[in-house]
Length: 153
Image (tube, rainbow, N blue to C red):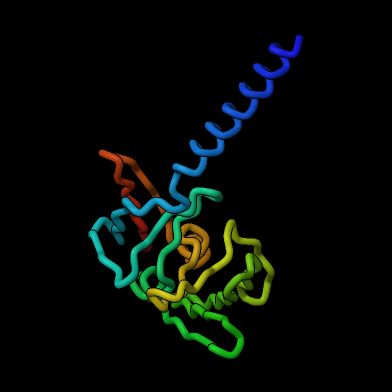
């Protein structure tokens, strides 16, 4: 009886340690991304990434907005970025908040914008920002690389 209890405890400990190590082995972010705008590959001064917890692709705000012809401004005091689109939309995003304001209407994003220390860029959810300003986002996977194409007419 005692031997069975000891075996059960040992098995449980080994199982949970193995499961915990397997989860710890997965990186928090995936960096194998190629970005295209209107089917032309573009590079960014900060690496885009996919946050595994939410499966959200993050890119620098200026990358997505300016490559689609929009303007961006930054308020250090409010920790807020504002996108002004050519079609009249105004989008406001605040660092650390999943709440976005599109023409002053509240929208919830899949993830909050972040501003890592290095590089000092505001990173935003690609699909949300692109679609809110009128673009479409398609992604494909090939050879362990994810290709993301943003298209705007």
